[in-house]
Image (tube, rainbow, N blue to C red):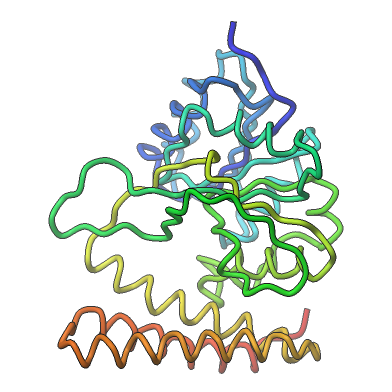
Length: 297
C-alpha cells in the first residue's frame, strides 16, 4: 500500500487544466503521497474545476479554491493558508514531480539538523525539441545548506520548494507586490528565500527533491527574461527602501553578473544570449522604477 506523508502539497494554476492534470497525476502516483493537495485556481472558466472533480475519488483529498485576487503570490498565500500539515510542498502547474518528490521532502525534514525549508533540482521535461528552452532550471546534484546572508538566487526556485508552515506564517507569506500576475512580474520566490534567511531560517537545497519543468518556446523565454529582471530590480529596491543595506550588495552582484555575461556574449557574437542579458537589464531598470513607486508594505 502506498504510504501517505504528513506533508501538504500546494499548486496555483491559471487556465492550464491539461498541464495541471499532468502535474496532479504525477503527484498522486508517487512512491509516497501527500496528505492533501490544495489547488488555487484563477482561471477564466470552469475547465480546471471539472478536471479536479474527476480526480476527487482517490486516496488523497484535493481541496479546490477559486481565487479572484490576481497574481501567483496571492494564489500561493491562499493555498498555504489552508494547509493542515506542518510542512507544505509547492510546485507549479507546468511541472511534473518526480515519483520520489514527496518522499525526498519528508526525509529532508526528518533528518538530523533538519532545515526549515527545502528547495530542489529542476530539470527540463522530456526530450529536447529544437526551438524550445528550459526555464528556471536547477541541475546541481550537490546538497547544500544555506543560512544567514546569502545571494537568494543561489538557494532555489519557487516551482520546487517546501517550507514549514509556522515559518511561512512567521515571515508573512509571499509579498503580493511581486510575482507573475502582479506589477512586480517575478522574484516572489527570491524574496521569500531572502526573508526566510534574514529571519534566521535554515534552507537546504536537496537534489533528491526533483521536479521536471515544461520547456518553453523562444518567444516565451524572451518574455520571461524581461520579467525576471523586472522582479529582481523591484525586490532589491523594496528592501533598500526598508533600510536593508544587504540588498544593495545583492543588487551589485546581480548587475555585475548580467553586465559581465552581456559583454562576454557580445564579444563572442552570441547575439541571442546577449539580447537575453539586455532584456534582463532593461527589465531590472523598470523593476527599480516600479519598486520606488509602489506603496510600502
